[in-house]
Amino acid sequence: MTTVFTDPAEAVAGIADGSTVLIGGFGMAGMPVRLIDALIRQGATDLTVVSNNAGNGDTGLAALLAAGRVRKMICSFPRQSDSWVFDGLYRAGKIELEVVPQGTLAERMRAAGAGIGAFYCPTGVGTPLAEGKETRTIDGRDYVLEYPIKGDVALIAAHVGDRMGNLVYRKTARNFGPVMATAATLTIAQAHHVVETGELDPEAVVTPCIYVDRILDLSATEATS
Amino acid sequence: MKTTVKTPVKTVEHLGRGPLGRDELAALVARDIPPGSFVNLGIGQPTTVADHLPAGSGVVLHTENGMLGMGPAAHGDEIDPDLTNAGKMPVTELPGASYFHHADSFAMMRGGHLDVCVLGAFQVSERGDLANWHTGAPDAIPAVGGAMDLATGAKQVFVMMTLFAKDGTPKLVPECTYPLTGLACVSRVYTDLAVFHIGPEGVTVAETYGTSVAELASRLEVTVRTLG
Image 1 (tube, each protein chain N blue to C red):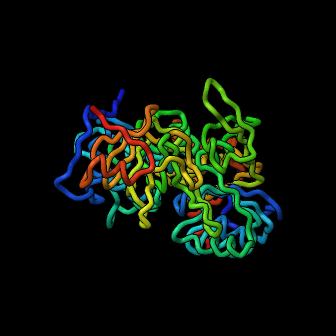
Image 2 (spheres, rainbow over the protein chains, first blue to last red; image 1 turned 135 degrees about the vertical axis):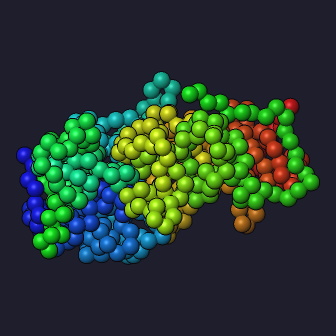
Image 3 (cartoon, each protein chain N blue to C red; image 1 turned 90 degrees about the vertical axis):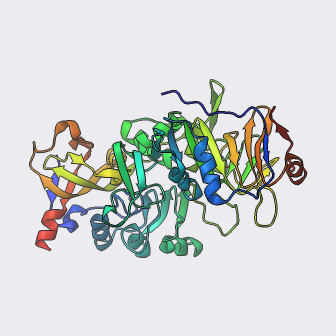
């Protein structure tokens, strides 16, 4: 059962200290900035954050990092021209980093959401990122054993939701959203607006409502704040 | 559609000219991408290959953040924050484009559906090992992105780089000294001075620009063969 919220604080209520939080977005496209801002105000700390990047500029994930709430980042590409917040924390030894190849990051979350215990992946074989991992040769090709990444919470950004929790996305802002929605115990989506049940074309739904627990309706949020 | 990368029959030495400029190098890579291919162009210089693909080539560009049918860079009113390439720059969509989530995007790559990817490199070994994600310097923040997935997954991996580093050391080497991105994955190396093919038989020079095969052989530590 999905609950629609108009107050960002209510949408993120109950996120515990020490949680693993999956945060959608590729750079700023698809980043759930309103939910992250609400999480900063909510105050949960000692978080492990899983996201493709480690913050851009000073908003969204970068602001959460700057607030000192993140113990560990799991991501594929932390270092960018505008990742100064993360860079400073990392160089000061104030944050742990686990670098995961981008496709492996996505697949580890897909596995978590799909009930897969682990999978053999060819990516990274023979590289530093496979060190210490179990390997196996299947039909003459080498693979590395990779384990799922499950979130306590996923924060994602969709384009439109309906009151049941079905979601559609827009262009490349879709990126990690659909996968993260499946991989967390509590999935919270922000959507530009929420329509009545039945208004979304069932053939076009990308994330079915079974994966979505809460939706923040940004159109109503903006109207009231 | 089945696509085949063309292989020249004889090594060509272009001696009456200088090394290739950056645009010329991008044009050369574009020339060798078979019509109708599904192609991923890496961040940085490989992105410029798109500007040299002939009209009507039927090449479909993949961007790992979830799109096939990516068009040129967006300008002015076309800029849409929800539509970016892997380098997070605004781009456009072409007719026939499609969007998909990240796990699908990388399944497409890892599953061997992409015909060609073009990547930059710090080093390539004579066996086709690639090093392009990390200098290994103690103060460097490691960041791999989709480089390992592309190197492992695409049917053909083309590398674009200068043949020599700024300090004069070759980047085509017997053994990579930088941390590896993938093993035996590079099939072609396009450089300012020469185009190399890498296969089970080792390194072959297909073309030279502003230098000869003999001169290249004297400056490299790898054994190079010629065609024809």
